[in-house]
Length: 184
Length: 105
Image 1 (cartoon, chains in turn purple, cyan):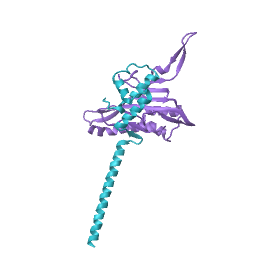
Image 2: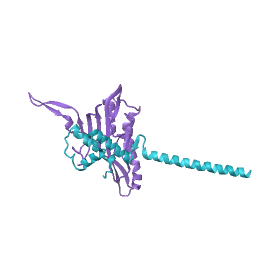
Image 3: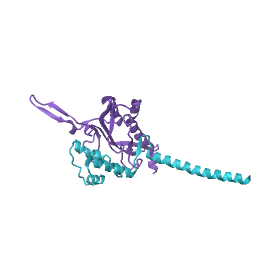
Image 4: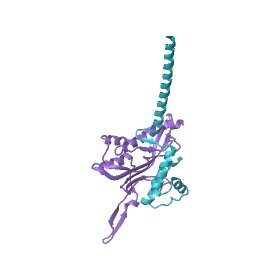
């Protein structure tokens, strides 16, 4: 119980940063799991009922949907001669850009460990296919949705920034750049 | 004069007690809200709400109940999935398991 109280600041800071980022493009609340300060548990955060939320474009509804699911854990780090500190670490994420029928367009994954499929490194699935010329007479299709395109560590702020600057999603707060800078 | 004063004092005490109880109730309400909304824009699900969220998403995603998904998940029925949008739906749903039950790290 005491541990949970001490971890509160770190957890609230992480989910606060996530909300700051998400709140640049949607008014939907984020929901966290019960007992969110318990250091013995894996915690998750997602939009509202876990559903994808609609995004508004600069010229009206974009028809695109956005989904966020993220895991975090609370860790205690102890340095000799110092009080222990509580840190909150993201342990998995799944950020999705979907069309109105909830078909995948872009999926940013990092789900390390044996519980999940795929590689342990952060990667991207793109719902598109490349046509590669492999000889003078032949072409080969390279479906990218089944491939794991490596990425660096991606934060929710990175994704929201991409939505605004690359997909013409309308920011709903004037200071979105400043808010996204906080997260990352 | 004395009895009037006494009556006023009694009345004041009654009002004070009511105010104290109102104030305590207000504080309890604020604390409940702070537990549910510790950060602006972030809501903490109760255990029941977490189970409902998971069940809703399991039915929407795979057409089965949350409990049935957890049974299949624990039995290892999803260990060999295609790397495809359909297969990824299972992993996407699995990200919500901590809403359905306490998930030890």
